[in-house]
Length: 208
Image 1 (tube, rainbow, N blue to C red):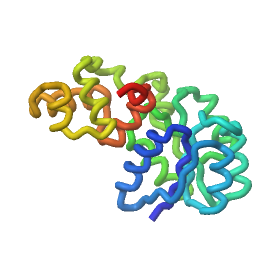
Image 2 (image 1 turned 180 degrees about the vertical axis):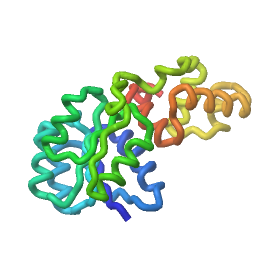
Image 3 (image 1 turned 120 degrees about the vertical axis):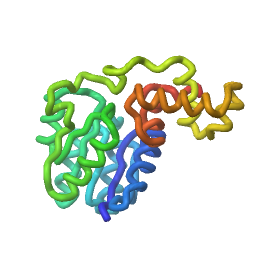
Image 4 (image 1 turned 90 degrees about the vertical axis):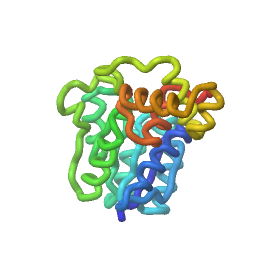
C-alpha cells in the first residue's frame, strides 16, 4: 500500500484527490495540509511514501517547502502538482527535490502514474510536458460544453444525484445522463474526482 500525503490549499481539490487516490487498491491518503508550513510539519509526523505537493500553495514558497521536505524526509518521494505548463518550473521542482511533476489540468491517470513511479523510486514527467503540448487545456481538442452541460456538471460536483439534478433543472433523468456524458467527454474527465477537481480549479464551486 502506497501511503500518500496531500498538500493543496483548495479543500475541494484535496477532496477530489482523496477520493481518486483512496479508490485505488494500492494507495491510501494518510494526511493532508492546506499550506506549505503545515505540510512540512504533518509530513514529518506521518512519514508518507509519497507527498503530492501543490506548487501554488500560500505560506512558504512551495519550492522551499519541497526542499525542506526533501531534507527532513529523504525517503519520501515528492510529486509536484502545478497548473502552469512551464517546463522551467518543472525543472525547478525537480531541482528542489521532487521526483515527479504533473499538470493539474491533465487526466487523473497522469497523477496516479506519477505516484506509482515516485513510490518505486523512479522519476516521472507529465506526458504533456514531454510532448511539448503542455499549453493545452482539457477541452482544447473538443467542442466546448454547452451551458446546460456545465450546469449539470456543476451540480454533480457539489454532490447532487442524477435524480436531484433532473428536479433542479426540470429535465428528464435521461437528459441529465446525456448532458453529463457529453460534458465529461468534451472536458476529458472520467471520474467524479476529476469533475470535483475541475470544478474547483475553474471556480464553479464558488456560486453553485
